[in-house]
Amino acid sequence: MTTQSVVYRYPEFYALGYRWNTAVECDFIEAALNTFGLSHAKRLLDIGCGTGRHLTELARRGYAMTGIDLEPAMVEYVQAQSRADRSKITASIDDLRHLTVNGTYEAAWCLMDTFRFLLTNEEIVSHLRAVAEVLVPGGLYLTDFWVPRQLDQIGNEIHQWEQTEGDRTVRVFYLQHPETIDPVTQTFEDELVFQVLDGEQTQEIRGGSTRTRLILPQEFRALVELSGAFELVGTYGEFDLSKPLEPSSMDWRMVSVMRKRATATTPA
Ligand SMILES: C[S@@+](CC[C@H](N)C(=O)[O-])C[C@H]1O[C@@H](n2cnc3c(N)ncnc32)[C@H](O)[C@@H]1O
Image (cartoon, rainbow, N blue to C red; front, side, top):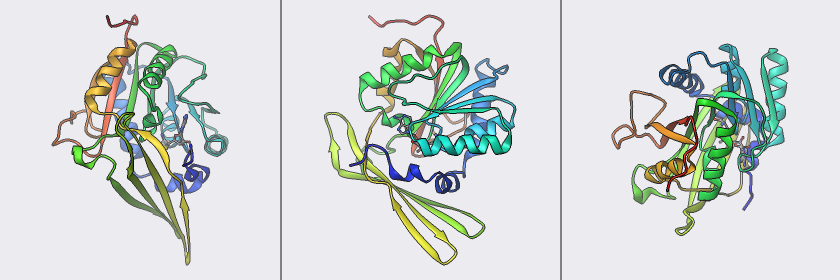
């Protein structure tokens, strides 16, 4: 088992494979800012930014963007893109389990399943408190992670999609390994595999298994409460504020909007 998927060392392939929903996701971020009283927002933070698809798009829309990621190849890719676009993006290496990022932001997010790298309740609660530290009062924190549509699907899901540009196609496979489920810690191993077709040539990059956490919707609500740092103001079945999380609206993910409390509360 690796601790970090090897596919993240290939940002060019990641950027193509994962670009499909970026504009919709950025529209959602802006809609959340407008809906929850932050239409004036200027400074935004992307936690686990990957290739910076949200950073780049939102910098184009006029925001000052900061991204952090554990994988040096991802951070270098974002920095190179930012230099090429002459955009207002700062990117650095950081770990969502022990955030050290500075600054003050109106909103932050952790998208595309990255939040599930927080494996324990303690890591989740301390992460939420650390994010709240760098947000303005009333600032927003958005997360988006896999939740099972049916409980008997836990650990059994496979997702597959592909994106093409010019002669290159990147096929992405997301695989869960049910035999690795630990029912006590609610963790299991999952894996990303890239198949890259360049003209006549094909290469396969197996990311290796990484341990991730199952976080169920009611449990997430309780952990946010426990943090005392945020109130959970909305949960959605996809990147659409008009689709609250309910069985009929659910895709494979839960998208959440949290608002920083004016003063931290500690539950009795
Ligand atoms: C599935 S990608 C999501 C990237 C981006 N948020 C997106 O929506 O495309 C997960 C990212 O999280 C990063 N990552 C994994 N563990 C991390 C950690 N402990 N701290 C910070 N970043 C981490 C990986 O390097 C990778 O870039």
